[in-house]
Amino acid sequence: MAKKGVPDRPPSLSVAGITATIRFERPAEHNRIDPDDIPVLRRHLQKISALPELRVLVFTGAGARTFSSGFTVGAILERLDRSFEELLDAIEGFPLPTIAALNGSAYGGATDLALCCDFRLGVRGTAMFMPAARFGLHYHPGGLRRFVAAVGLAQAKRIFLTGQTLRAEEMLRIGFLTEIVPRSALTSRVSSYVEAIAECEPGVVKSMKRQLNAIASGDRIEGSSRDAYAASLASAELRRRLMALPKR
Image (cartoon, rainbow, N blue to C red; front, side, top):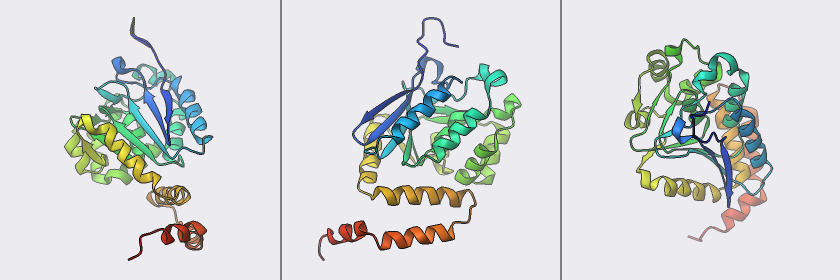
């Protein structure tokens, strides 16, 4: 429910060059994710998938306080269902590289959404906490798996079983954040990731992302990984790129 006089906007989608950006648009309400935002976000993902020129997807929040506070607390009892969990799984499995540009702190389900992304760049002063246990909510299996894979069992237990607030430096130390950057440098640092990804062969990037995620989930991928390796080794694109390197 929006506060009186405060616009209630769903997440927006913008495209610039090879980058799509999904932005949470409720800064006055800590960029909460309303249940009605879930189909909006799914449509954004579909639109991005249909644009072959895109190479990177960025998630960020409006304003300077909060990346997102996650699922609307007042809607948990009546409207929290598998659709939010399935959205997070879709973000985790999205073919393009994804970047969570944490313009501020992340809470609840938004911490999980950030973990669904391949890279997490947080500004100085960022914090996070997972209040599920305080609410009496047993978090869903996919999110528990993501936390254990990203930060290890001990830190995942700390996050879920205590609900403690973690600051940016601790988030970086345990592997939740990829980098901490000054607020003024967040946009340029995201751009540097985009530029680096743009230099890589997109098919190989998608294939390796998919297989790295599978490894983190405990799947056995030796056969498919070996096949992908052999295919790239025999590809014309590998030959072209190697031939273009400066001669030594």
